[in-house]
Amino acid sequence: MSAFLVDDATRTRASGEAHRRTREGGDGCQRPIRVVVAEDSYPIRELLTVILSSAPGVDLVAVCSDGNELRNAIADSPPDVVVTDIRMPPSGAEEGIRVAMSLREGHPEIGVVVLSQYAETAYALGLFDGGTGGRAYLLKERIRDSEELIGAIEQVANGGSVTDPLVVDVLIRARTRASHSRLASLTSREREVLAEIATGKSNTTIADSLVLTKRAVEKHVNSIFSKLDLTDSDHVSRRVKATLIFLDEQDDDHPDHPHGLPSARRATHPAARVRSSSTSHTPRRAGHPRSSRLTPGDQPTR
Image 1 (spheres, rainbow, N blue to C red):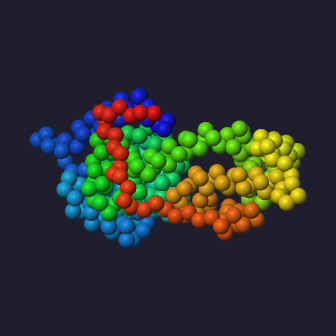
Image 2 (tube, one colour):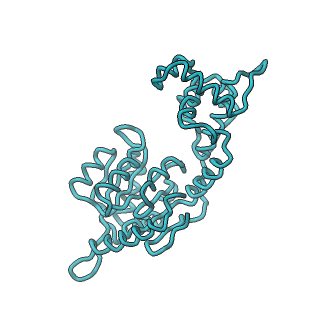
Image 3 (cartoon, rainbow, N blue to C red):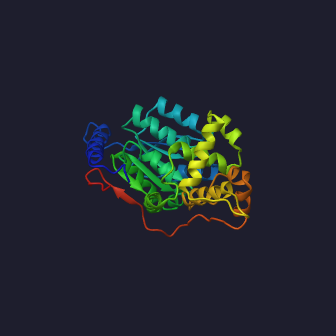
């Protein structure tokens, strides 16, 4: 994974030393780790509250139910660690990742533990963008074991990093797939056009959506067909074949998500509807090895 760099190890170690210094009291003893929690699910939010309120060495200073409350809590009294869900109101999108990225710039001393229902490649890469120091990605099933959660909080508070083993597996598979992907030869613009084709749009509609001329779209479409070695047959058109290839690779990017592609995109194209009726995905469950941890003194590997 590209975030595991030698220079990042140095920054992580220095960051951890700074974090420890800021929590030292006048007698040389460390004060409790100040934690803010953000989770929109009431049962999980209550479970986190119970675990962290009773944890020695942890001071739960705020519990939030959405991204706006989380940002306000951080602004009012910056914590040592933020424990956050990924998908929360108000956007319903990756609020937790956005907060983590903004903290990297505005409050690099604040650690972040992200909790996710599924191991998502894009979320992991977004969280670790800029370095792994002071960042943790855990599946929500891990909070059943309070020691896992408390351990992750302690690690990121000291500048270390914790990555759920399933997330590591997903990142490794993503790198392997990228090297063998049939879409690897496509340019970024061709990938955008292919994604539009997969929603069932015509060339004219794609041109309007991507602010291109119809002729430019036609050139991109022909290039896609050529690079994917697609030919028309009596039964299946090249657009449908290209769509099926795109959907296959998109589903592989989300092996632990029960829907693979976002439902809106899957349902739009006829090929997607036919394909989805015979394909299902179930998330991996508990019973996996403990999370891998990178302490500030460890040498991360690429």
